[in-house]
Structures are given as C-alpha cells and as structure tokens.
Image 1 (cartoon, rainbow, N blue to C red):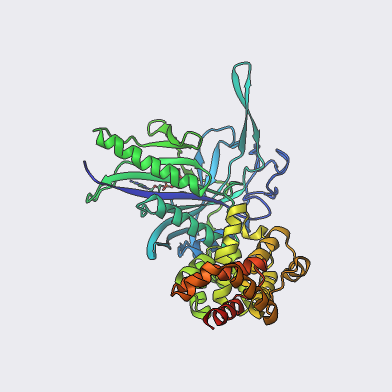
Image 2 (image 1 turned 135 degrees about the vertical axis):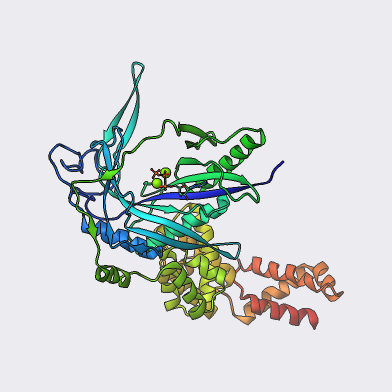
Length: 480
Ligand SMILES: Nc1ncnc2c1ncn2[C@@H]1O[C@H](COP(=O)(O)OP(=O)(O)OP(=O)(O)O)[C@@H](O)[C@H]1O
Ligand SMILES: [Mg+2]
Ligand SMILES: [Mg+2]
C-alpha cells in the first residue's frame, strides 16, 4: 500500500480587542444580554452606512507586521454574499483580492527543529451573529438569534499549505496565538470564540508533487480537538484512497462526542459568494509613516524574547522556548528573576512545580495566586537555608492553593529547617541505633544504604532537617 503524506493549511479567525465594532460604535463587550449591543448599522437596517473603525485597521496592520507580512498601501473592502439568519445584511463585509497584509511567515519549533510556515494573507472582516438553538416547537426545530457579535472586528489569517502533520498544525496555531497575544490586539480565547480555526487537509502519495483534493474542517474549539480532528481526517482520507475511492472536496465538521468528522456541505453545495467591492466604503490608503509608527509600537515578540532569555539569563533553548510561549508567563518569570537573581532556579520552579500545579488545576498563569514576588521570597528562604528543598515543595503547594506569603506559611506550620547540629546529631544517633541492618550494610560496603538512613532522619523531623547536615553527620558516625 502506498505511503501518504498529509498537507495542511489553516484559516484562523481572531476577534480584535477594540471597544467598538468594525463599522459602527456599538460595544464589542462579550457576555452582554442578547441583542443589547446593536444599532441600525450592525443590524443592517435599510439606509445606513458603515464607517471603518481606525483602531481595527491599526490592529490588523500590527498583527500583519508581527507575522512578517507586507502591508498593502492600497486595499479595499468587498461584499461576500450569502444568506444566513445570523447575517442580517445578507452579505459579510470582508476583503477579497486586495487584503491589508500578505506574504508573511512564522517559525514553529518542534522536537528541537525550526520550520517556517508561510502566511498567505491577513484580511479584515466583520463577525456574524450567533444562533442559539432551542430545540423544537411541536416537530419544528427553532433557534434564537443574538446580534451582539454581528460587526465585531475579525482578522482572518490564512496560512500556506505548509504543514505536514497534526503536530505541526498545533505548533503553528500555538505560535500564532502567542504572537497575536504579545501584540495585544486580541485575547485569543478559544473557549470564548475569539480565536477560531478551520483546517484544510489533503493527502498525497509520498513523492508526488501535486496536492491531493482537500477537505475543510470546522468546529474545533480547542488545541486538543484540532489535533484529534486532523489525525482522524488524515486517516479517513487515506482509507478512502486505499480502497480505490476519491476524496470529495467538501466542508466537514468535527463531532467532539463521536470523535469523527462528518460531511457538512460538498463543493456543489458550496456558496457562490459573488464578491464585489463594497460601494459604501472607500478604499484604504495607508501611508508608510503610519505603518512605521505601528511597527515602532510593536512589543518584543516571542522569538526575540526567547533569544534574549538565552543570552541575558543563560537559559537553555528549551527553557527559553517554554517560558516565552505566552507573554504572561514570560513576564512572570522576569518579574521573579528581578527579585531573585538566579534565572535557572526560577525557570526550574516555573517550568516544574508551577506548570505541574497549573496543569493539575487547569489554571492559567493569570489566575495563579502565587505572585512573582512571593515565589522570589520563597526561593530566598530556600537559598538562605531557612527551609529545606523538600519543605519548599510543601510551602509552594500551600502558596498555590491559598495565595499566602511563604513566610507566613513557614511560621504557621513551623516549617523552619533544623540546622542545629546538636539536635540533628541526637536524631541521627537514634536512627543508627534503630536500624542495625542498614548500618551493617553500609559498613559492609553497600554505600547506598545511607539513603535509607537519611530518609529515616528526614521522616523523624517531618522533612525539616537540613539534608546537608544530615548527610554529613550520618557519614561521620557511620565511618567512625
Ligand atoms: N490541497 C490542499 N491541501 C491542504 N490545504 C490546502 C490545499 N490547498 C489549499 N489549502 C489551504 O486551504 C486554505 C484556503 O483558505 P482560503 O481562505 O484561501 O480559501 P477558502 O477556504 O476557499 O475561503 P473561505 O474563507 O471562504 O473559507 C489555505 O490555508 C491553504 O493553505
Ligand atoms: Mg478563508
Ligand atoms: Mg475556508
């Protein structure tokens, strides 16, 4: 049977974080009561005229620049015509042949390798409303429509078909999300729909140059779902070809519950959008000076920040990559290092215990109760020997769960490390007396037997004994 290679291109929609909509001054606030952020313009009532929100253009340019695109000095808006109840005008204002930004790229890092993914274009458009499906009246299904989202500004970012695996697609979307979040033009919340992704997928026999027929997957609302859906779809297409069939060009939807993709509409049923320039909006002429101004306002982006973390803090590439994966995490790390100047130690705690606890609780860095100053404080206690490494882990968990200062926790729970030689010596003697077998093993040449004895001392002191001292005193007594 033939070996196949997958070809993947993503279309990503990002809601821009402006206060008002793209063509009117209705609010873009998320979560308001249905149909409370609407006006004649976004409701598409007869006789109204759209006016472009300058902030939307600025944000689109900013995103375009962050994605290494060329910004078009001249672009225009077009009407994409189709009927759907969530689209009151019967057309969506979008950009067709002259988008605001083109020819960009970003780099993904997978298994230590860097790969460039081309970005075809970035264009501006308006979001549609939301249908809220209600069930049925007698046997007829019915839905309510909420127009609050109608006219919320979007950018669509279209990639080249440069990805070859579900992992590359996920890495691309993660990087794209990070870059957009760094620029602060969107908060990119997949659960709230401010980041949405369609995946175009085809397969071809290894060695074949032409692309195969693609399908377009919609309705994946997490990174996990994206990975699962693409994996499923690649296998489905390969099965079709292996059975002598042909992949049909169609749009499919990801069914999360069943874990399968299902046909939505075929090419024949596809809309003919009858694009034409929107006569209600003038073309956009963008000066080089404005683009320069926006470029100058760009923050340090993930790749640059990663390189700086390696150079300035001497961190391994991998640490720098993980720590700069979101702006908030990178800020957290740097705030901590400012107060406790041992970058590798801070990195180990952030990537180790903090990441573990975040995973376990599903909490994002913004919701973490340990403030950077508190983590720095704890690391200082550890550094000074006030608490042992083992106790530090306990303190850290308590900090994570309660948000309390480390000093308070150590005080309250009596966790101060025991570094009093006399005290430890006494316990060491007791442990030696109580464990003749291990002592014999050690003296008979099984040096690793000391590990058990150290453990017994730590147990007796509830982990509070200074491990360095314990080791030293144990050795002295055993070897004497
Ligand atoms: N053979 C192929 N296999 C996989 N991906 C492909 C293939 N051909 C094109 N693509 C990808 O499909 C996507 C097409 O997106 P584009 O927005 O240009 O068109 P569209 O899906 O027809 O438009 P719409 O925005 O109306 O959905 C791009 O990301 C492109 O890289
Ligand atoms: Mg598209
Ligand atoms: Mg599409």
